[in-house]
Length: 109
Image (cartoon, rainbow, N blue to C red; front, side):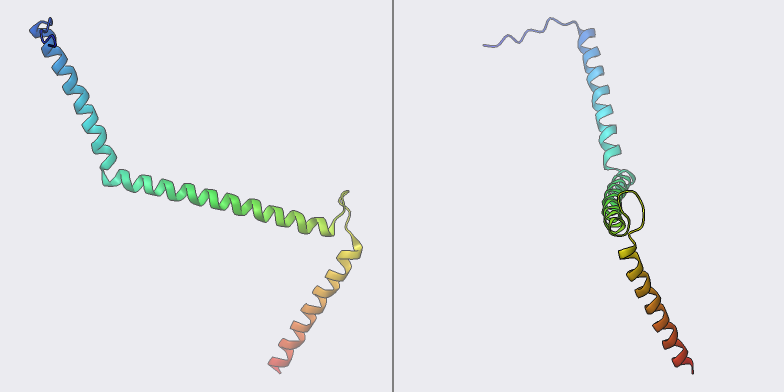
């Protein structure tokens, strides 16, 4: 059989009960804060912001990578423009702008 005798004094038992009640009250307060609607909303907002930051960060890295790749097509390792690639693209851009301008003038007339 188990020994059920308690060697504590009534004052020690009361102090233990008081301490356990305080711990229980703190735990209940903590649970109350966690399930409060404002806490839940705040946690949800924080998760959305974190996910958005992560997505924006990944998009920034991807865009930066693409820009670097495109830049590498038009600039050599020393930073000088590659004229054999820049000139045709510039001529193409001027041609497209010219065609758009002529098209607008014809529509207005």
